[in-house]
Amino acid sequence: MTETTKPLLAALKGGHPDRTPIWLMRQAGRYLPEYRELRARSKGFLDLCYSPDLATEVTLQPLRRFDLDAAILFSDILVVPHGLGQTVWFAEGEGPRLDPIRDAAGLAALDPERVTSFLAPVYETAARVKAALPEGRALIGFAGAPWTIATYMVEGGSSKDFLNTKRWAYGDPDGFQVLIDLIVDATVRHLEAQIAAGAEAVQIFDSWAGALDEDGFDRWTVTPIRSIASRIRAAHPDLPIIGFPNRAGTLYEHFVRNAGVDAVSVDPTWSVEAIATRLRPHVAVQGNLDPGRLVAGGPDLTRRVRKICDRLAPMGGFVFNLGHGVLPPTDPGHVAQVIAAVREADAARV
Ligand code: 1CP
Image (cartoon, rainbow, N blue to C red; front, side, top):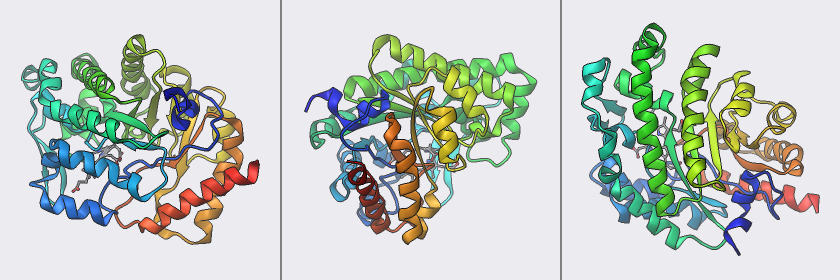
């Protein structure tokens, strides 16, 4: 099988592969007992990300269990601020923490030049995963989008209202632009290094895009992602680029026309009909099962998967995925149920 016939890569370019490709955001992680076991033996989450032996194993775990079409590199979006020189740590049970950056003095300490040498173990993991991938499966690299990365860098961790970041972005846009430009630069280097190591597609996660208003979304989500996508495309014209402007509502339509991506990952709030008529005419689409349905299981889970596949798969340019990441309480048996339902939908069409 040649590179271009891998079902995931064909679908992301708008094609009709033999089978509907499926992968799941956060397909490696805490819902898998084999992940929890390995994680308990590691010194910490970042240590796991920077240990090629362990990170390769964790990346491949979901593919050993399930008939998935892609592996996503096991890492985190916050390795980019870490690589830039910001202090980042994961407090046990509390999520990510960073020493916040709120002004020009904080920016002066960050250096995009050190990102790829600092993150060399991540690229080593990508190379090892690529060498071990089963036939027909693709390796996805990823990064956080500049807006989402900036929220973590400025707030110092997760946030509900992003007030420090919005005060800066809306109150002093030219100052905030310096931070965004720095992240764009670091992100291009980080994605390029993943591609050089073997990544065959990349996804840019804008998890907090839905927090911005129309003008903010254009300047801080669409424009920086377009600039990353155009720089990646200049060097790798055929490599699919997926954008994920999570929970951006009607602004998704602006995104698919202007962000310069090949495909869009769609959150669970979108109806299948609106995906088919408003998004799919512009880009390939990926999504959009509610991760909560994967927790609940039952016959409604299968029904929902069929509804998504029956409307979107015949159009081509469709990748089955969740609308956001797998949740830790998910029963792995429900993942197997979803994959079987996607395969049954394919079989019902021939
Ligand atoms: O304790 C643990 O084991 C850590 C849990 C964990 C895991 C498994 C974190 C901490 N990150 C990850 C891996 C991860 N993160 C992947 C790997 C591959 C896969 O999908 O299988 C990916 C792609 C991410 C991306 C990521 N990290 C995003 C974007 C996607 C999304 O879910 O919106 C975000 C926002 C993060 C930050 C982050 N890292 C970890 C947590 C718990 C969070 C979210 C914190 C928050 O809600 O603000």
